[in-house]
Length: 335
Ligand SMILES: Nc1ncnc2c1ncn2[C@@H]1O[C@H](COP(=O)(O)OP(=O)(O)O)[C@@H](O)[C@H]1O
Ligand SMILES: [Mg+2]
Image (tube, rainbow, N blue to C red; front, side):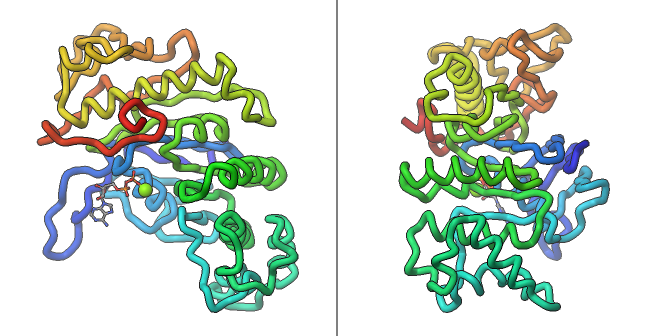
């Protein structure tokens, strides 16, 4: 069963606020579903609207149009069943780890269940550090404390916004493995934002690749790699194929955002000269192949799914010509 459903969600900043005109769409017609206990990863270039998408699910931003349903009810405000974890742990330096973890519960009012607080501190492997102030912990430990603070709320979904993006490679890998073991133990869905293609594949059951200006879902890929996932899998053909498809899409997205169409695109490997259909090329009604071997009518031979919001379909980029996109880790532009 789907715990989260987004239907045709568009967000324009400025809309409906006093004195402000609606700007261009930051997110346009995004539709997605997330199953109970599913691990969804969302990959996209910087500025494409990943954080905005999570903030809509969290209830911090209201969609201009479209529907957001969580557990069957419309999302109207933040709620403890949808908890965000940020790139920075945002712990209070004057509070102990234990008090930081309890902070959300205290905000809710009522009695704090300290047994549960200690249990979650234990779950994230910080039981020896309960009384420590956060600044005495390493970056990875601080992020574990932030995770405990989220878990203590008993969320049904963890909304993770590039949570390991600021960590060194080894700590990041440790925390990736730790998060997966935690997710397998706890009954929780995860929507995990990253701009790192390997991370997206290693963690997810399914992966969305976002396009930019406006933010949209360009590609949806099932990740049918067995679990537990290991670093060694990154060398396997199945992993590399998913990686290739994701990077092809990111490349198309970047070219499109830069206003490069037609012949320019053909100069890059994997991108046919007419393959990125810039500026909203009219639909011919025929099945079109893009560089990932998809066609506009549905699934291709490797099981990937065109989302109908994708790179080749109806993406308008007003005034995008000449703009550069920020690099994406793992993409040719970000190398
Ligand atoms: N509160 C806001 N008001 C106006 N524009 C915003 C606001 N928040 C984000 N944006 C803009 O929306 C776009 C997407 O931002 P964001 O969701 O943070 O992207 P990402 O997380 O993918 O890097 C950016 O151009 C950003 O400047
Ligand atoms: Mg962001």
